[in-house]
Length: 335
Image (cartoon, rainbow, N blue to C red):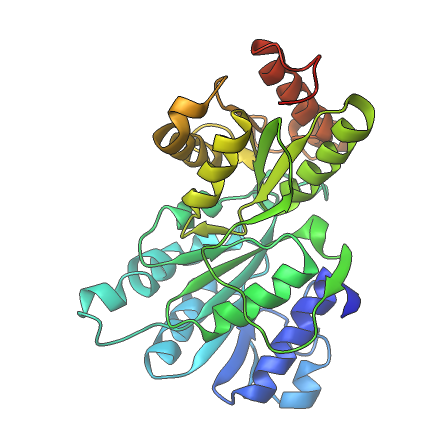
């Protein structure tokens, strides 16, 4: 067990998979000589050469389409798109081709490719460079979409994604790259489609993913230490497939839920989670499911406005208080 950053976990896992399987290769803008915009691919060009670490033109649709073709022919490309915002330029290749080929051709061809891409606000990159548009992809049958929040899950789910025979969108958040945590040794892939209960609790369930999974844990610790409220935290980890049973079982235990996401509220991932709770645990709910998300605006550049638009720990605490107050449980701090 080693302690390392999220960034290092991604780098080491890519290197290990390239050593293990000669069919794994990397594609993306500035990933070779420049070593990647976020230095995930540092040193890999020198070690593996330009055939397996391919710098591409600034043409997302073109190189994503090339990766689809390479995957159909038996290779396992890992594409780095500089930010998820730029993936919109490759939407046709991802949604109309990578996601559909297996079904359209009756299972005769798989598309075993991974698209790694970061997103998220808080870096003053302005409205067109700070989005979380994972909903576009989680909405699409034929794609798998994962969003690990810890270095350990980054390793486990990247291993699983590279070895999967379906196309996988691997979501990273810019705010997570320097976070650190313990990462198990060895070659053990995670399970795509499996959420994790990262903190046990009895009063309320907090459901989150990516950066907001960290916020959920911070809030749970604060509520426990300052108010005696026991919050259970469910880290989704995978957005498609979505682990509805884990979410539902947690809410059956706590009877209350708040859903957190780093995205716009309307039509968001949280709406799907809330609907799943309503379908599977309606008779157990003591209060409506509340949702915490970013403001419904293009994210401002000004730092103060950007922080005001993004969901915060205080927003989550307020939502928890409102939920427990509605059923008269906050003052008790126990369920």
